[in-house]
Length: 173
Image (cartoon, rainbow, N blue to C red; front, side, top):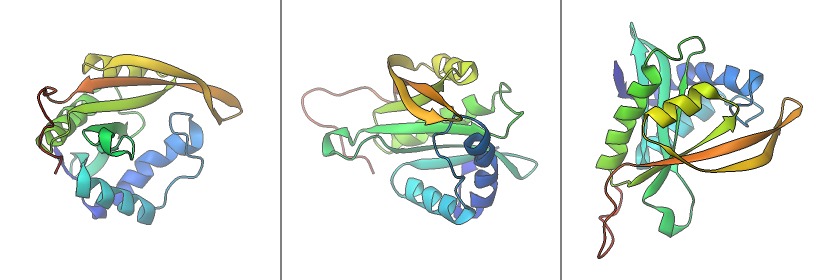
């Protein structure tokens, strides 16, 4: 089941995310956020974008969220998205389901484009994003140092809604 997150999901989301921070270069954070910090992230995303959780037997096993792409006003119709699953649960459809539900919510709020960055190599994430209609727009080479190595970041994007001509669309809400 997929549902909107609440701040009460922060403990589970922090636990899912921590191994990505401590044991991989998938996240460039070096210290896992505390549940209190994760609750703040959830609250911020819910105010302006969206944060969803995937549950199995009432237990949170994954999450996806959208947030601002950049702070400059012209970027306000674009959002950055991410998805995380409990380790061992990848390639079972959970990431796809979370993203599809997230895209619907973001489009309903007025966002037009989703972007995502992926540390390379990461075949599972590249495959998921490609299957969901993201196209590669570029690679930043050697921009992150983690786990004693330099890492590249691939940037991808996909439309959430048709781009309009003849004036701006309604403001995201």
